[in-house]
Image 1 (cartoon, one colour):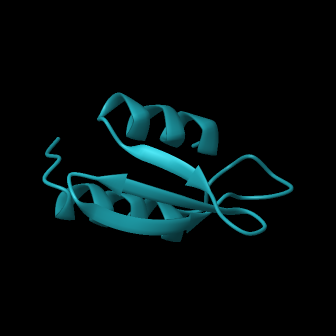
Image 2 (cartoon, rainbow, N blue to C red; image 1 turned 180 degrees about the vertical axis):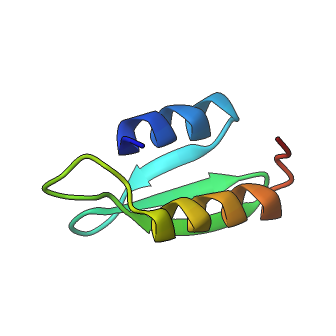
Amino acid sequence: MRWKDIEALLKAKGAVLSEGDGSRVRVKLNGVRATFHRPHPSPNTDKGALRSVRRFLTEAGVTP
């Protein structure tokens, strides 16, 4: 899955994204905060990062 698609999903759910140092992206949704690393040089997100995003969404109260 491409990282830009994950960012679009987060924004659609109401998350606020801000740039961190390097490839870091800070995300706040429903009072829950997380920091993710934008993949590079490939735009594709690895399975571990996808699990982290899923966990973050669950903690923020977003259900499938």
